[in-house]
Length: 274
Image (cartoon, rainbow, N blue to C red; front, side, top):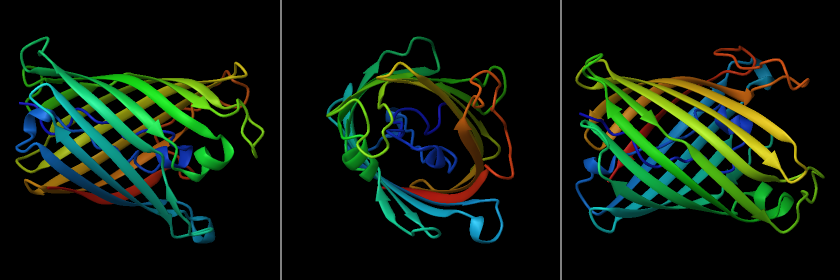
């Protein structure tokens, strides 16, 4: 039977540092909902592996509010804040994400299928003051399937997503860089139940950006975590993540890696739902 992973991706206008900090993703299967209105609070503290003043420590807080309109449709909004404990110690808001999700009939036994359309509203400093984002629109799919017939306790999730963004100008006001017009994202998650309350999760993301100038950028993110279900509404986790540009500066050689002492992040956090 599928666990709690499945439907909402918090990945709107994320920076490379945010990707490397565990992605701050909350994915929920609508079948597990016991009430129409629910709120999930996720908080994590991430740290790089660098020593001394070069170490980066960030606290990330996400609040996901979801309302089930009926057995087919639901709406949600996601608000995320990052608080740095090093460097300028700023409290930064990410862009606000509104999502409409539609449930479809399971294509195969032991699976579920959701289609979601999302609106990104500029709330982050980068979107408001530099790129001058007006809005972003995305369309994605969440397909989840239990793989007990292969390995007991194993679940699989596939979440492709396409996004287009609209700006006041095609070039950033201060950066002078061409803004991202399109993004195509591929996401693959494997979740394995170790025991009654413990689970392992392997979250893999790869996406490509296209700017108005016609240039492309490939980005990757790998996340591995162990979660403990303290009670039905509370879980805690510990994990490692790494993310960044998928290609070196020459645009040919791969920069994808599973671990790097200068780029990897470790994190711990909790998810509380009510």
